[in-house]
Length: 454
Image (cartoon, rainbow, N blue to C red; front, side):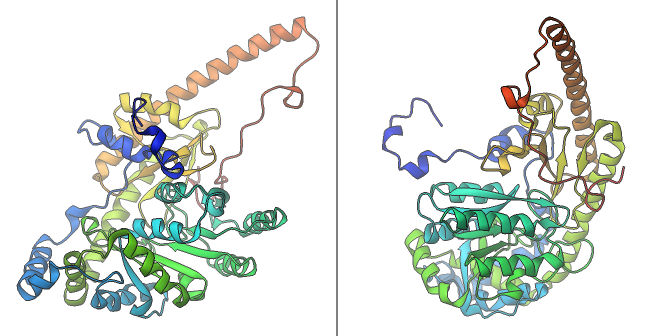
């Protein structure tokens, strides 16, 4: 934000609080050819069938050109709405197109749902870490975000219950729980089967709506994804989907599968924002999924991403030796690995040195609303080729080694200085009487099921 902005005193309170995401700020640097970027989560669009997509676009213009280039309805193209339940059926969802609302990517759905439910000072609950785009969408409505930590099995139901009970004691109730249960962005973990019913039961008991964001659910590497939360509770779960990860992100086609009681309200709020989504992009999406073998393309994309994930995990095993004290998640799908550094390192402060070493990542603090995540970072493996990913991991390991050596040297100097001070002053300060406070524990505990086994 410009310091000399002449309109600064005229902005709404909600937009004053909004800032550019760290990921967007990184793009200009990370896109340089000399940088091995492990930062932005861009799909591998070069793996799409361009000849098929060209045929689809030509077919749409030939068959329905005037209608495709006209305004549409706020609810969305009924043909596409009826086709999307076939995609959701892979996760056990049985839905009617009547309860599907087409949006400009699932990001718009997050914004509209925030507008529908949130007033300034309201509380929402989200995993910690969580999707940075959701934090951005919700921030303009001046909400308080309460993070619930995750482990190797995803969201921790026990701490979720404690959080909801604490809110109840405060006389407050979360407007909704925002969760990415499958192949989480940024953590890479998946909510365990046995936890899913626990989370839904807690939400019902506390009258908290569940927002299930599922951009990566069809990108599993090790079998079918678990049944969606929406498949288990159609009345209290809003399911958000997108074609950006399984087809073309440039089309900006997403959707919200609403509980029947909420569908009409969402359409009204959406029409106030954009009148309607693009008829043209909806028609292209419908014709592709209705008339072309998209499942074969999806299968090949999953293999592309699996190879890239394996390349990153192999490089991490080789470059991050156990003595460095780092751990990382082992995703079973999606785009991301969450790397936990030793607690004395600051991933944001380290980024400038990483860029100088020609590697980019996203510091973990970007994925929290409350300052957590200092010693963690997100690695994305979806876009660069495997050899480039591995080179990026090697460069990153070199930066971490240098930072660790510096931190240990400084710790030694402090210890020597403290020893001199203690020899002069028999009273030693502790955290309880004004000394330094201990750093918070990392959000994803070291767990052999999710991190490197070394």
